[in-house]
Amino acid sequence: MQQVRAVVARAKGEPVTVETINVPDPVVGEAVVRIQSCGVCHTDLHYREGGINDEFPFLLGHEAAGVVESVGEGVTAIAPGDFVVLNWRAVCGECRACKRGDLQYCFATHNATQKMTLDDGTELSPALGIGAFAEKTLVAAGQCTKVDPSARPAAVGLLGCGVMAGIGAAINTGAVGRGKSIAVIGCGGVGVAAVAGAALAGASPIIAVDIDPKKLEAAKRLGATHLVDSSSVDPVEEIKRICAVTYDGAEGADVVVEAVGRPETWKQAFYARDLAGVLVLVGVPTPDMKVPDLPLIDVFGRGGALKSSWYGDCLPERDFPMLVDLYQQGRLDLDAFVTEEIGIDDVEAAFDRMHSGDVLRSVVVL
Ligand SMILES: NC(=O)c1ccc[n+]([C@@H]2O[C@H](COP(=O)([O-])OP(=O)(O)OC[C@H]3O[C@@H](n4cnc5c(N)ncnc54)[C@H](O)[C@@H]3O)[C@@H](O)[C@H]2O)c1
Ligand SMILES: [Zn+2]
Ligand SMILES: [Zn+2]
Image (cartoon, rainbow, N blue to C red; front, side, top):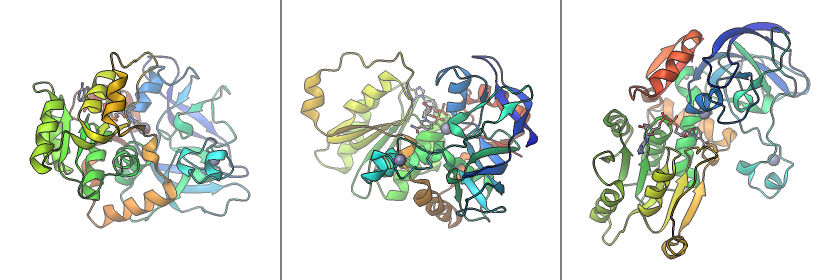
C-alpha cells in the first residue's frame, strides 16, 4: 500500500478537498497507474452535486493519462512503464451483450476489486471506477489502454471520457460521414468533440449550436461550418434552413447530437432532424427531467432513430490508439480542448470556471 494526494468529494454540494489516500498494491487483474494528467469533466461536478448517486466520499477525476507503475498477478496486456489512457469500459467478454458481439454495451465492465481508502479507512468511490485526480490510482488492468508514448498526456488523456463521448456520439452512434449533415446542440468539451468527429468523418454541413458565443468560436476551430447562437435565433428553423441550402429538399439534419442534457434541447434536436434522421443524446439528464408534450404521431411520422450514447459507444482498445494516431498526424486537434493546465489543488476553482464559458477543458497536470 502507498499514500498519495487526491481530490475527494466528501459530501453533497460541499467543496472538494485534497487529501491523503491509501492506494493498495495491485492484486490479480489490477494495475496501479502514476497519473500524469486528468481533465475536469462536467460529470465530476455531477458526482459532487450528488447527481450520480449518494455513495460519498467520491474520489473524483476520470479523464486521465499516465504510466503503469505496477501490475497484479496474471496481468499480461500491460507492463510497468507503459503509457496508457484510462478507460471506463473494460469489457468483460462474458455478459450477454459481449457474447452477442455488442461489446460497447457490456453490462459488467471491470474495475479494481480492492478499494482505495481515506486515511481513517473509509472506502472511497472512484468516479466512473477510475478516480484520477490523484498522484496514483488503482484500476482494473483492462482500464489501461496503451497508446503512442510520445503523445502529450494532457491532450490524449481527454479521450478517456468527454472527447471520446463526443467523437463517438457523432461517428459511432450517429454514424455520420460524407454526404450527411449534422447539428450539435451544446458546444462544451463533449459537443465540440462531436463537431471534431463529424469533421474527421467528412460530414457537411456541421452546424454548431450554443447560447455562448465563445463556445461557438471553439466549435468553429474544430471544424463547424455554421454557428447558431440559440439565445437569439430559433435553432430548429436555422438548422433546417442551413441543411436545405446544401441538400435540396432537406428538412433538417441527418444527425443531431444533443450534448447539453436538458429536455428543451432534446426537443430541439428531435425537431431539427430531417425525416428519418437520427437523434443522439449524449448529454446526461438528471432523474427529474421529462420531455413534455411530444405527440407520439411525431415520433412515428418522422421515422428515424432516437438514440442515447454512453461514452460514444466506444471500444477503447479499438478507438483510443487510432485517435491518438490521428492526433499525432495533425488530423485531430486534441490540444485545442486543453484550455488550461492546473494543479491538483485547483479542481474546485475549475468547477467554478466551467460555468464561465471560457473553458473547454481544465486539465490537472501532475
Ligand atoms: N454520455 C456520455 O458518455 C457522457 C460523457 C461525458 C459527459 N457527458 C455529458 O455531456 C454533457 C456535456 O458535457 P460537457 O463537459 O461538454 O459540459 P459543458 O458544461 O462544458 O458544456 C455544456 C454546453 O452546453 C451549452 N448550453 C447550455 N444550455 C444550452 C442551451 N439551452 N442551448 C444550447 N447550448 C446550451 C453551454 O453553453 C455549454 O457550452 C454533460 O451533461 C455531461 O455530463 C456525457
Ligand atoms: Zn460484457
Ligand atoms: Zn467524463
